Image (cartoon, rainbow, N blue to C red):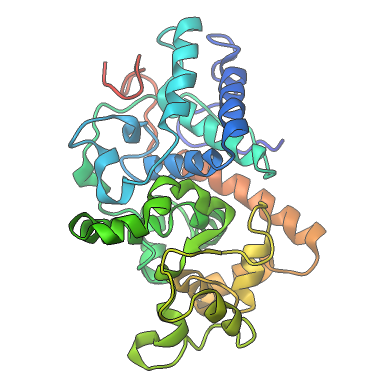
Length: 346
């Protein structure tokens, strides 16, 4: 396990005296839910990401209510709330008023990655819970429609650089990237019930995208009439194009699931970057990482053929990026509060 420095007043082992069993309880809770539904790991990682990108990592995403952050359009497919609530209930019984919901979420995200055969790391803790949660503040989350330049601006605004962008997108992409497309279409589906029925599996299993699946409707435009030219997207590898066209015929079922990672859709590894390098990315927003000069070089390094070198390097960078992300605008000391119930302010 690697330890990296954290921002602010966070520290590794913050609860070692005040609630020494805290991390073990959170781990066992995540394990219990993961054993029943492995896709919950994806939900927890995405939940943490969405929390940190709005008002910092302060648990504001966990608050319930019609105007709360979790009800913002980009957040409608979030999952994993019940895992955090379960852990909080156990911790309140053992150490009342000690462990914040924001820390539970950060630790649960780490454990989710570890349980998915990914790397583990020491999570600096000591976050306090925020006292505000507004859906109106969630409008600047990264979107799959963003260019690399826009993504870079949004990450930079949170203190994250190009390497963090590529590193996090490589894994987090499978979890959240096309939820934005889903929420856009949701407005249509509410009017046209047939579309809602078409997407029923997608609505119920957004977290499954972490193991590399999306619906044909979200990328078929690349295969047959890209930018209204009548041709396919020229960035798609010519040998990969017929496979995609066979899986997603032009007038076929838009709800059919397709693996985002054609080589290892259920593993935490660098295969994603190899697909981007080789023109085998299913989603256009992924392929853009190869076309941008700055992100191109990072993808190229991660996609190296020597798994023992580049795989370990990616794991190292992913740990660093996760710690940076989980330290965004944290509240510490006397700021915020320690909620008794994660979905409610005290």
